[in-house]
Length: 322
Image (tube, rainbow, N blue to C red; front, top):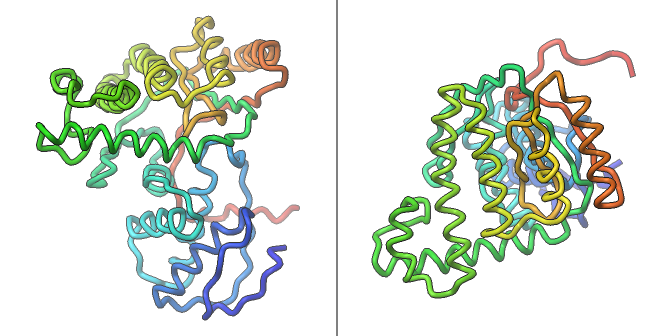
């Protein structure tokens, strides 16, 4: 029960912090863009934990935009729907997010990883054959209370680093340079903390490019090591991890059935992911739960997942049984 009965032609306004602000924001964007919508009832069903860094809000935004676009023949392209979803998050909800989550929800492909340039929105789907591995999602069950404020803080720190580097380098983004170039010019970034933030971003960008190559060559062992390196950098240089996330990765490094692990999302709680042998998943789930609980005092939630397709209409998928 959304407890709202506004006229569609008047648009909507954000109401508190409720989850339904996300679909309302999408409908509001369509209406303000001159699209003619009729009344409808929408049932949302999903199993993505809310507030855990797994893009539940982006999922609701994109699927709502996709459904309205199809139902009312609004004529938006899929990329336009992604931009609408991001705009809703930024302007209706008030969260200063980027476009990666919405893009992945819209353009994801089964058994493929997306390599995305968030500036140009050029992307490449990289074949990702997990073989006898699965992706384990470990929800620390710690609320991400600091995530939004610290996210905005990191954005500002990276902007300061970019401004400093632009004194000598003709760049528009930190990702325009590689690690070697940064090391040659990092003296321009005089603040030690800002220097660490920039180093993480630039080295992580290099890791992403390398990860695409090792995935294409089906080298999951090396990909796993890149996951660990990424987490270490997020912990030590970008400083967005935390005891809970570090505990999960700490355990993963002791388990020979795990190829790699890292935090995901904005950090400060939320989830980690691990590449785990499928036949060892149940054991991994039990052991990481026991280890985490002994260190933190409460249990995580562990999920078994694979890589699926992005948004779309599911033909003949409606269940008649309640």
